[in-house]
Image (cartoon, rainbow, N blue to C red; front, side):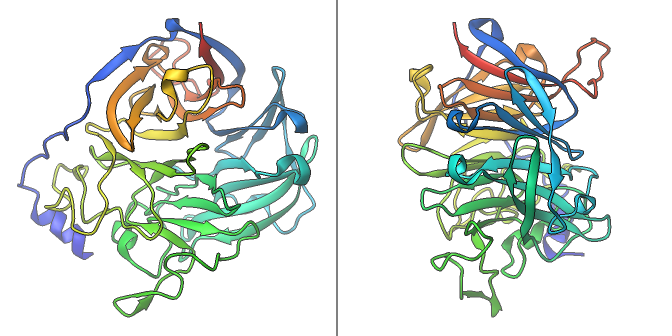
Length: 396
């Protein structure tokens, strides 16, 4: 049994962690906004991305079972793959939390038509997170090429990460979860698990990656690693004004956190956490750890954050610079008020809609895009399987 798992078992009688101090939570209902339904009837949608107007406009939505939908003027069209065999759809591993994940048009999409998609690859015995690049035509994703596969593969069908963000220097960052049962690997040098990685557009390693050529305890780092000590990053976003990279990740029972990312930094998991193991034991005696970065904002109990955007726009001027965070367990949209890199307040939005918020983005016109993974449309207490919705939020 792994060292930290034994530590967790040894501390099972240690009691519960106290909830961390957090700004007061205020609430606003959906009736205070204009909420427009752009698309509905989707099955477990996972991510949304906007297509620039000069390239046709509309939105791209992934569904975890493998579907990719283009939404234009209220019409949804399923996209097909063409021009393999560099990417084989049968490589997609749909199980547990695995499947088709994030989608991100390249910064120069109007010229190149390039899109990047993350997905879970493999099978129940050996799986991980991969990244594929393709060209978007009218109804197809053409000439797909897999440019990265996390290694070594794992067995657990959990904690794939998969969020994509482009940095101002045209490199990209991909989040990789710790695999749940492999949490100690988040602190290891020779595995991609529990890391953010940084790649060039063709999947190569940037020369200035912080761990390239470095070692830890005599073991060479994977050269793609950008930061480490993460659990399951389900939100990743660039502040378009400052270029700062932000992420959030699930804690276990409590300890969800929002982090400002620094190249080469260690964010502590699982040596430091404000959450408990699912059996109620402490995972570690440390809520913070010397030399590791503590979260900017946290949630205990967990909201299960998913999707992240840093708001910049004219429609909600009071929100500029704030973090918008989707909640799966909390079934709402959270606004974290950020001032000078610190959290000074939090607002609960849209909780009256009752849907699991999987993704949130800021549209080019300043509206907020909210992707509902599932909700109970018929009121029977169970989420309806085809209840996914893409909503547009604007001020009244």
